[in-house]
Image (cartoon, rainbow, N blue to C red):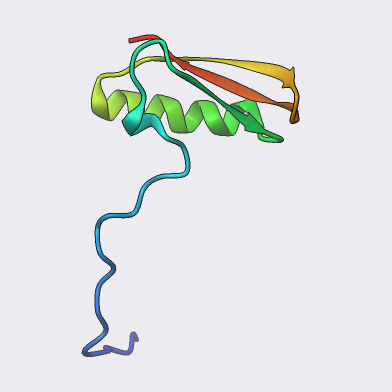
Length: 74
């Protein structure tokens, strides 16, 4: 059985995702330090499918250390 709560405000719908896919233009890229390629790729694929965008990802080592670079290609 679940307890029903009343007068609890719903969250506003203006929170952004973890990665900046929605503000990227074709040719833009960003670096995610210390993240697994699989996790970032799953996010990029899901967002791209819902918004008709394509991304290319690569595991890289940059000034911040190892991580993932994400490019918007379409």
